[in-house]
Image (tube, rainbow, N blue to C red; front, side, top):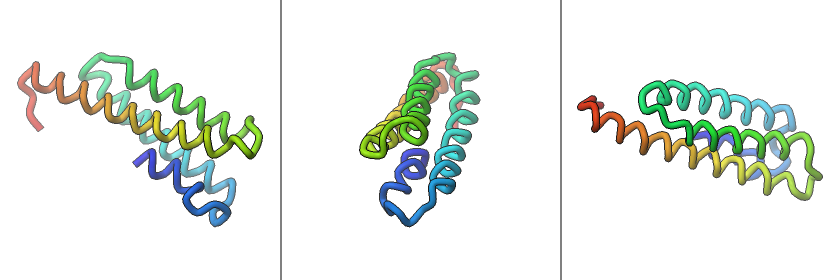
Length: 104
């Protein structure tokens, strides 16, 4: 979901305002922080959180600091990194659940 939310502004180019773009990325980041932090308490692996931090840096740079020509690269890269953070988090969560006998 974060990758989709982050990529929406680029899929529709000028159909979404800059404020909406910032809102979408902010909601996506908030959801990611909430979920990854919650699961960190279970598996104690900080790699997904660190990857999320890099993703957020890319997104913030893409929105506020880089020239418009590079904005898409930074924000799509940030979205892909955020999706990777979710994937790693899922892996570590499943691994922790199997080692403790916890079932979903």
